[in-house]
Length: 157
Image (cartoon, rainbow, N blue to C red):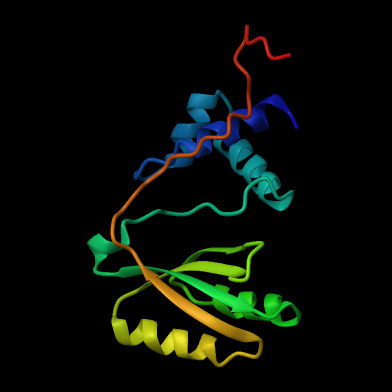
């Protein structure tokens, strides 16, 4: 990976400002043309370094309720169930655990009825044995930053 790609990944992790031309501003910060920046971002996404670029909203302020869902899914049905879950626009994180409850995801919905209807569909899928709802009681926001580019003078051995 080229040094500029590492700089782009570092900068993207800091977020984009809400303005008319955020990539123009980022390109100027990085000292490259905006078109070149966008080409490199597309390449990094295609290569799998970037999974998603999008807004992160505090769903509760928009009237949504978030719930953590834990499922026990039979192995032979795991990926089909995960694929169906991922189609819901309110699903953010969906991950596998090495545990009896092997599929976990977060679900944000505008109403309890919407949540219950979706979860009833999930419960009815082949291979779904157990489903637990763990409603959010307190909000924690952790910022994770994966430093791609080492600063000049860093000694890592």
